[in-house]
Length: 298
Ligand SMILES: [Zn+2]
Ligand SMILES: [Zn+2]
Image (cartoon, rainbow, N blue to C red; front, side):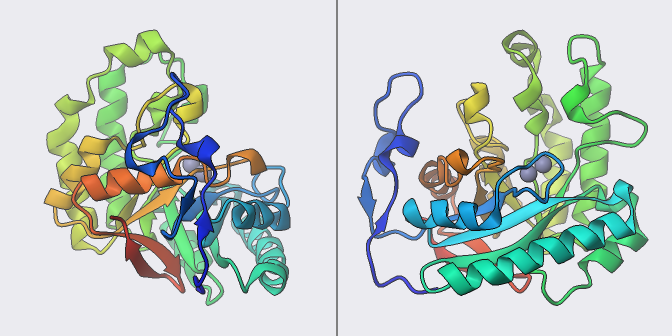
């Protein structure tokens, strides 16, 4: 990754949505810091619409040094779906590298859905030399519907979270993921009323086991900023969980917007990196060739 120049970070992404004011130390509109967005979706995701080249152009405009395109690779959709998705995505990424490669590191990633539920297929899909980065995510737990569709007013939240952490533990040790995606992101789908009833700290003992397992297996987590447009005021997972991961021996944290639109590429990444640093990490990670490359978070 070249970085001989000053990187521009759009001031609009550093504003507090409530007041319009700047957030802490990331209020500079010009920075020489390296920032990377390690979680974005293109038109190759079932819920995406943007071209890879448009995502990369936005990343360059906003001064990001690196971007990972991590399209949804939902294993329940089967092998041919997942292989076809990778082929189309990787072809676009090769073309984007020809165009933007001098100023932007482009990581070929996937967001692998429920690998712990499909171990054989996960092994096949991730055995791919072109793959730079794998986010392992849980969107649908065993015997349940997608978190997006859950009726949070009527579901047994305690049972839901206990199962979630059990499955996250399996995910942490399945061996196919570089980082665990958006821990605790269900909160993004809850309305204010339901959200205010949820005290996730009661599950911290079991979540600590997940984080210890991830650290032991060399798996990272991400600071995901997609909750901000939904009214959350923190990353997913929250700041305290980032600190718990550090205490558990974790070393790898990526920063990702989870953008499904060009407009959100890079959103709040400086804020996320600031929180990663405050939580005790000197560096944040960006993946190339399934290996973390570390950059200063301070
Ligand atoms: Zn996801
Ligand atoms: Zn995503």
